[in-house]
Image (cartoon, rainbow, N blue to C red; front, top):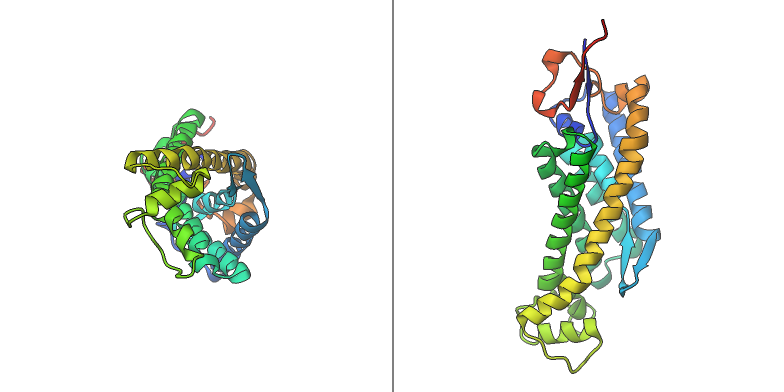
Length: 268
């Protein structure tokens, strides 16, 4: 029997092709996802830091838990945690502003999961630490670009209308929205901007914010999971049996070659 070593997210994809071996394993996985979801809610709700250049924005690292759930249980795990932690936050704090904040948080989690899925498919996570950090960089750029675009198109304009006398979602394509949003963001009521000026203002605020947040979350995952939890799981028969099954040690002919990071030849 050969030992197959997975680095970080590679094993997440493997889980999607496995079936639960017994009801106890299923319960354990459900309990694990529930704990991760609760932890994600706590991080999202109570561990926030103001962004110095835009105090209304808060940096929080709950996506560490989303990435961890994906690493353990693939797409189903990541999406499950993203949904539950968002619903918990919605239940505790209520649908403030038509739930625009919770909707934004859920979309952000989905962007992390999508970035992880794509970079895993590109096999960047099985080529060593250097390529893993390249993947983190790609994901950070992807998440920050998409979320900045969404803030420009609908999220930030909607913040100016969901709390008004006529609460509704709005987009930057409505009359006067660009001027009102630019005035709010810059604090200059007399500002006059065109489309490109508006894009520049949004990008200057949200691109670095989202990139810093993504970088902190992914580096936090790397330090927490790949450097600590993964090694503990690899060495613990209990974790191998109930949490990740036969991911760490399988017969060579049973292993999907697309997910193998490195094979160690048995010692003679």
